[in-house]
Length: 158
Ligand code: ZN
Image (tube, rainbow, N blue to C red):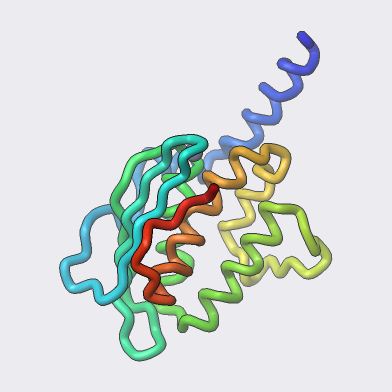
């Protein structure tokens, strides 16, 4: 069991890359958005991550995305990077990024991954080794989907 612990520790070091640490320490777009016209709550009971996402939708375009909440480094960094990734995008573009992100973290259809679409989000590629962490990384995106579709209920990863 000892070797197993050691190997997962080094994988975790890889996982907590500089970008993730930076966005956890100084989350971008963190706070309430008073003029939001879309919002949703996300909750990951497995880890305790909580998220309130605010979206300002202007026609078909996301002009502002902000979030509040508490959770682990992965969930916070993911929400921070997601708000950056979708700001200025149309709903269709954001959906494409979400699909790419989902494939990245679940390790499915890797051949279809597009580095240009993913950009900085590629740092989450390491979480696919950790099923529990996949839920942390995906929470913000599932919450975004709920906000854009107008679903009122809290999104749960379970
Ligand atoms: Zn978490």
